[in-house]
Amino acid sequence: MEKFHNLPQEKQDILIDAALEAFGSNGYKKTSISDIAAAAGISKAMVFHYFRTKKDLYFYLFHYCWDLITSEINNQFDNSVTDFFERITLSTEIKVAVIKRHPATLSFLNSVYHENNEEVKDGIKAQMSRTDEFRNKIAMDGMDYSKFKDDVDVGIVMKMLVWMAEGFVNPSKPLQPADLDDICKDFYECMKLLRNNLYKEQYL
Amino acid sequence: MEKFHNLPQEKQDILIDAALEAFGSNGYKKTSISDIAAAAGISKAMVFHYFRTKKDLYFYLFHYCWDLITSEINNQFDNSVTDFFERITLSTEIKVAVIKRHPATLSFLNSVYHENNEEVKDGIKAQMSRTDEFRNKIAMDGMDYSKFKDDVDVGIVMKMLVWMAEGFVNPSKPLQPADLDDICKDFYECMKLLRNNLYKEQYL
DNA sequence: CCTTTTATTGACCGAATCGGTTGATGGAAT
DNA sequence: ATTCCATCAACCGATTCGGTCAATAAAAGG
Image (cartoon, rainbow over all chains, first blue to last red; front, side):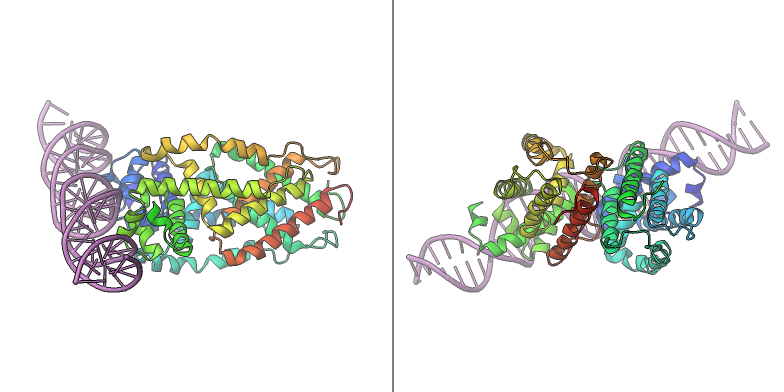
């Protein structure tokens, strides 16, 4: 795989993006190396030259995305932020940073999570079991719910935000990185609106 | 296709659900009749017996879903409902009714909408151009925005609800019809919470 | 300039799968 | 007993699969 890493970053990214997109939307079995090569504008033989087998490529992408997210969390996450909406905004910023680097990362990882092809299933489980670590790290414990109005059911607010985040990350039309900033602005407006109306006291 | 309609409804539904699910998540080209047959628990030859070709099956499903949604809209939609959240709830109820009948309908239609396979693209466009009719019918014109607090940006609320609806309809984990009622209850709770906090006056 | 190494690919491999057909089988209706 | 029809395993030629390899183009080194 040194072969691949000797490529200029730009060419690496093109191939990675093509592969993430293909695997992410078609799953392991239904994605062919020809698809990926064509989308990346190179020959099929080159893909096998960089990564020995389809399986190798798949798991390379898996670990690559995993590290991408892990490092982004380690860089940005701050558990001293206890305000509910600030925490939500923070984890959204993490997602956005990941998407900006490789737009198909999250849809790929989601597809990996649901993959059940015999050839790769076991290898996924091994790594995937650590998902909960992060879920707990980002999770909402130690959060300050006291600023909410007394009659607001925070559980419902959580569910609402999960839906929004899903629609945000898996839109029916694929995300263009160019649109990301606009969409983000809308999302932050959203957070402001909810905070202003669900908290006891107006925020500045 | 009389062959197919002579089947008991239950067996028709099994095949339709299998086909919607397969086409919806893998697209036209990457979906094989063997996949569908296996998922429906019948032999590949039977599928070709009911529907002469793969293309015929695809467009049968397309028109089937189209009619399903059209009739559900005609049954339930009521443009005399001018309250914002009631209208949202109404269109959600329509979606839920459709999903209860065939869980993969919406994901299938969404996939059809983005399909660009040469063999079926043209046939899709012909019908799909009428999508806007319905979008306008369900749309929010004639809506009463006056009950919102003055400082609430209704455009943002709309965007928020669109995201929620997307996460609601295309969840990362596939929808089980059994869960639907619970999820709906949460969604309606959500609407109540938003209405109570974004309207000038509390609703009963 | 020539040589050696490396990047890149078109053509190819056997195996699998594709959309679609067909002949055989078995059960229900006449 | 016979007709009819639903059902499917086996099969068809064509395509595509994951993967290899020999040949070429390009770059590097002398």
